Image (cartoon, rainbow, N blue to C red; front, top):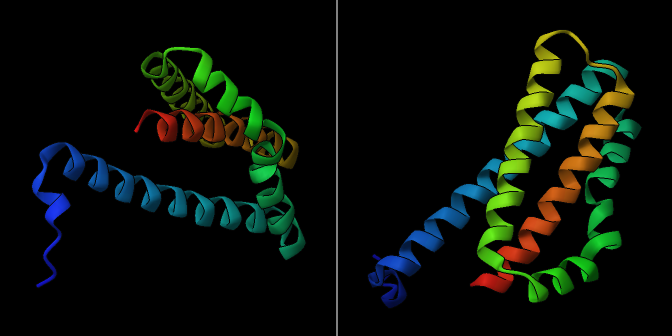
Length: 128
């Protein structure tokens, strides 16, 4: 069995497992988002476009999010972005549950989700 001395430390072990589960959740989100867009449009081109919209904030806000992370309290920023991300996902789920699954709505929620996600990633990386 693989011995990893770093995993003997409880704080690092929590960080490592949390990051692993977070990555699995993000991968699942990408698959579900792509399946939803394909179900609505029946176009693989739209799947690529929606993923580009998802990752667009990385290019736009990348340096800004790092500067904000250095300027403000990281713990507070992480809590706020996580709460905003959860609230946004719950709103998106409610709209889908109500049958409001128009492509512009999905694009808007994808852009907002990507924005919060990349701010959150910059804050969590600078915190560790």
